[in-house]
Length: 119
Image 1 (cartoon, rainbow, N blue to C red):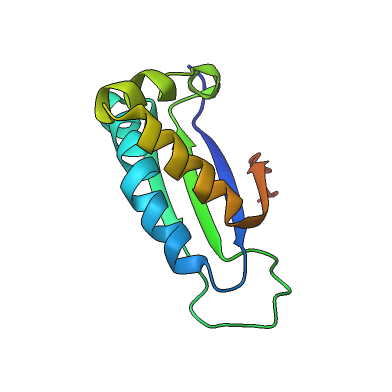
Image 2: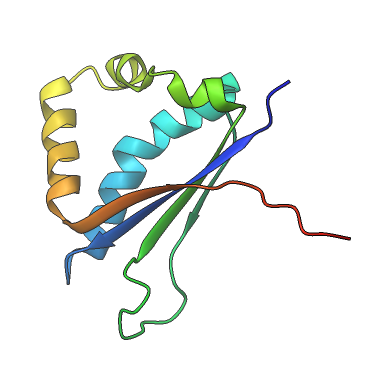
């Protein structure tokens, strides 16, 4: 049996647009992630932001951690089907998703690999 796979999704929002990004994320993307979680494709989804405003060395201000059931689950692409069922007004959904990504300065994904330490 394949082991779970954790992927970190980092977002750096444009200055002054963090709240708008978070609103759009929660309204349009979280329901899709929640469906994937309920279906068993994901075993965990976590959203994090830094507690304090720093000087930007971290390079990100939103972190989403998704633990996939296994590697095969990372290859499944059912987000589009879920979005169609959740958002009948696809024009609005697509415009808001485009806006969500326009609010970013950067976005990158990091697939984590376990590295066991010696006893």
